[in-house]
Amino acid sequence: MSEVSEKLKEAQRRIGALAKASPELFGGFARVSKVAAASGSFTSAQKELMAVAIAVSKGCEECILYHVDAALRHGAKEAELVEALEIAVEMGGGPAVMYGAKALEIMRALQ
Image (cartoon, rainbow, N blue to C red; front, side, top):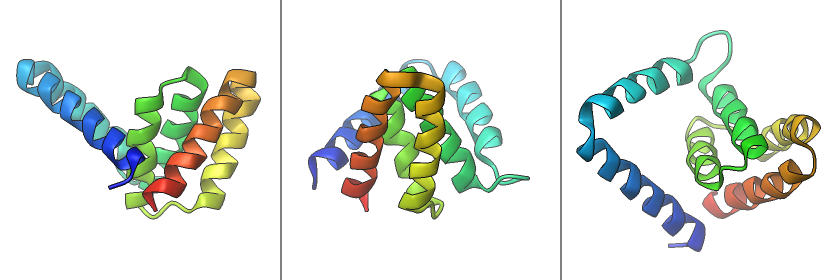
């Protein structure tokens, strides 16, 4: 298992611990996430790439891990991620460049 995969598993373990500690809160959040990620005018992959771009601009590495993994599971391609990262950098400046590079590295490690 790669270092990136291990980081993803660790983040998922922590999320699971929070879900167990606060099932009502997490249940509500899980319902919001399910609705937000569902295919509509945008595909689920496109929505996950939007989430990656937001995570990059906010500087949340674990969010990047989670949403890159989800984007891949929904069929997103590296070229699509790069386009989403271009928007993240436009909106987030220098810090987004650093987290954008992390997102690309994560996708390559998870493929």
